[in-house]
Image (cartoon, rainbow, N blue to C red; front, top):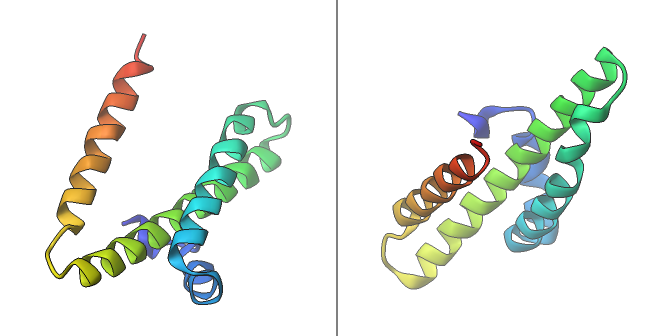
Length: 101
């Protein structure tokens, strides 16, 4: 599971300091801006480092989103986390289909 990666360690510290919503929002923006640059890295070692950074950023965002979902679920006093994961899966599937041409 992605949450058990190296990115999960700094995610906890960042969430405690800045809050889950801020870490998720900022992290997804940074990930979105950084990931398209990965194919253009000219050297194999730098390419590996760029992939590692993209994976770590993704893990941080994943942890922050789940933490925030749990916070909202607790405030709402009903189970919503499974629905959030379901909607994410639908979005990932539709996103994958949109780039399949």
